[in-house]
Image (cartoon, rainbow, N blue to C red; front, side, top):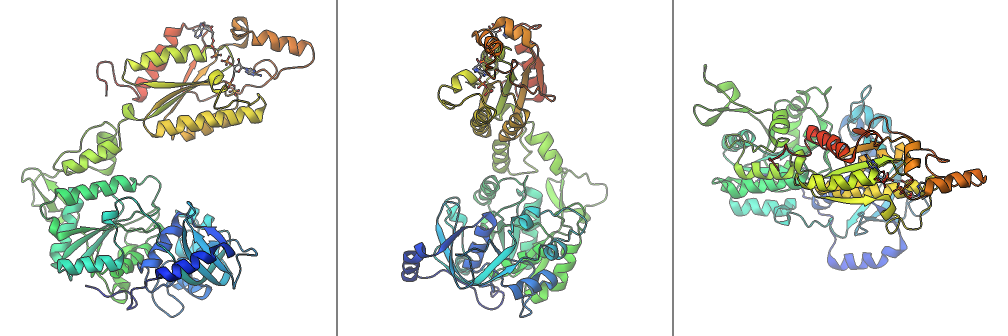
Length: 566
Ligand SMILES: Nc1ncnc2c1ncn2[C@@H]1O[C@H](COP(=O)(O)OS(=O)(=O)O)[C@@H](OP(=O)(O)O)[C@H]1O
Ligand SMILES: Nc1ncnc2c1ncn2[C@@H]1O[C@H](COP(=O)(O)OP(=O)(O)O)[C@@H](O)[C@H]1O
């Protein structure tokens, strides 16, 4: 097994007596709440995943890491591990700072020795290589309020985790595990993608090549937007473990690393972490790029240059392809002439299989993994949905929405209805019709509908919602699963209907010079210009309105063609 980088596995977690003493003193010092990346970095610092670092980088280390990827003492270190702070009376040199997670859990104390200015330009240019392109990790650069703090770090507890606890091991625990397995040569495979058979085969071959074991390290810290969420990925890796007849040669351990998305430096960090976890080898893709303008070979070049110094050997992965006539995988460059090959691209996985609710074939993915991916990526007809009715009072929103509830049940989509009038008797009780209160009202409705949509439910919202900006906020809350129905019925028709007598009151109020702030009479209504469906209920009957919405939902895939309920 490999020794830790720098010779010693760092352990910053204090013993229980010291932890108790420190907790008792916590009230006397300022607290800061770590963001997602901060929590991940703290965990890896605490357990030695970032050995030889003993804390967040001080200025001398930071400056040299940014420009030369080396610590001040010359040790190769590719990426800044920093703690952003806003200096204040309690956050100052010589003070002690309590570090907490968003739930308020006390994680560590930093005895602040220095607070220094971040060099955002140098970070952007040297670390993220973004002289003329938008940084992939702009959120990371933007997250920094301008200063970093450093000093002696004492960790009271590592960030608590309640998911996949059986697959979480510190470097020390993993080393012990390797020892119990009798492994001395181990290839690490850090990944944030689901593993299909081709990748599995690639990783297996790497282990065979070195005559050792395989460590899959699912990266579960903050990853890139659009990545498959870590719960789904880890369920897939676990299925692999449970399903695999060769599972004796495979270990899965989660890696709580917040990725910086900046090759090639990130690849070097993976190598250092692999070594700290006891691995002797790192599986490396031939081409890897986080951004379209990245040089795909840069990571491999950097690794070749520094692997000796890091003390980890590189195994360059062999991409695999399926040979349907032979029922096996083969290295792409070893396929015999004239033999048929089969593959499914990432885009096909997404668009042709997952989006359509079609299971990936067994030759491509283990059935247990395919089932998890399908369950986690339901086709649109099984995804949540918000149908948002907007329009003047009396324009037909509630009438059409109620009819739609019945009609959608026919397609297996059961809906809840949030009707403006009713909402204002509880969720929004006491709110007026001022612009501010209307916005609050709509935000509440949008928030509730968004939560329901994200968990697979369907909500029909029937609210005037006169302002475009807040309607758009509601759309975002539902993460795009949002269909806007604009009841464009002319105001004179709404007024002639005057279902509740409000228009008459509003006109009377205006005539008396008081005004009532009634939408369409003496209050504004901003009509949508991008609604999915527009209905003038003075021209269409209720059933025709429902037909138009159903046709749109069919076209968008939110309901199945009749008789094929999903
Ligand atoms: N000043 C004023 N302006 C508009 N509407 C008024 C007003 N005062 C009372 N009402 C009644 O309240 C219902 C609209 O509530 P909403 O929650 O949908 O309005 S908003 O979206 O917050 O603007 C609306 O009911 P519907 O007719 O069902 O739309 C009105 O009857
Ligand atoms: N095609 C139609 N669609 C919806 N409502 C209609 C239609 N034709 C007539 N109406 C009548 O118009 C009124 C609309 O009121 P309502 O649905 O409460 O509107 P809103 O919810 O927009 O305030 C109801 O009395 C309804 O019967």
